[in-house]
Length: 54
Image (cartoon, rainbow, N blue to C red; front, side, top):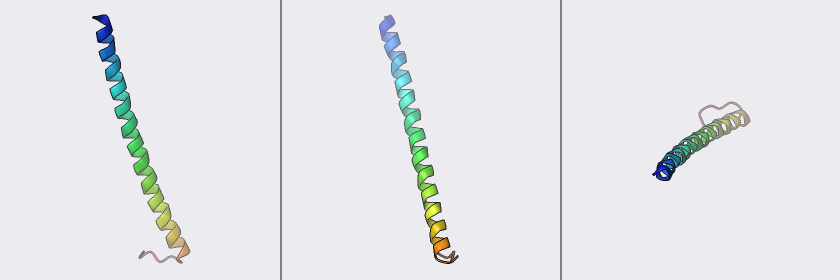
């Protein structure tokens, strides 16, 4: 009985850890994507002589 309770508890920890990992990984990807887009547009704006319509 004790081993099954321990296994259930461990399963919850693993599921929670995976959930947090994927959420944080998704946030990192989103932040990296947004930062990449911003830096791309900023570099394009600088190299095109300040034409902000692009």
